[in-house]
Image 1: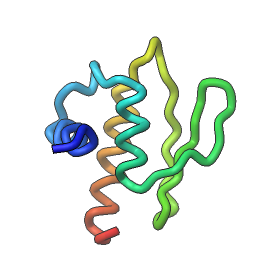
Image 2: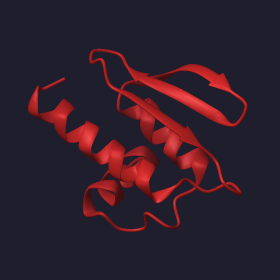
Image 3: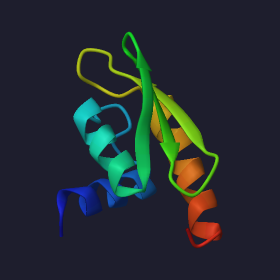
Length: 84
């Protein structure tokens, strides 16, 4: 199982939202079909390749914010429902 697959399992399980490395969030976004659209300071905007979904992320001391992971999980559910 690849690291991206392990991160997807962790995201879907809803575990570890408070100890999720920012670099892992970026890897997870790429594996789900997102690409970085733009960056302004520490804020990055990621878009999905087939959906109009946009998620804004930023790093706090190398960690992701828990609400960003919850947003990603909601977006991922929408993508799965539409078989994208």
